[in-house]
Length: 71
Image (cartoon, rainbow, N blue to C red):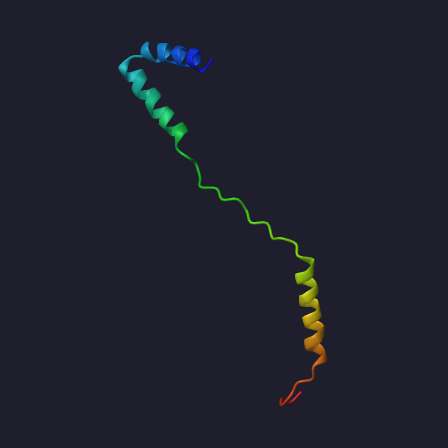
C-alpha cells in the first residue's frame, strides 16, 4: 500500500517544473520543522502521608513553647 502512494507522489513530483519544485521543497521543509519545543507539564503527585506529616509538624511546632527567647 505504501509503495503505491510513494509511486503516485513521485509521479506527481516528476511533472513539476523547477520553480514549482523549489516552492514545493520550501513548503515541505516548513512542515518538517517543529513549531515549538513543548514539554509535558509536571503534575504534582498527591501524597496524603506527606500532607499529614506537614500538618502534624505544624501542630507540634505550635505546641512547643519558645525556649530562651522572649515570647
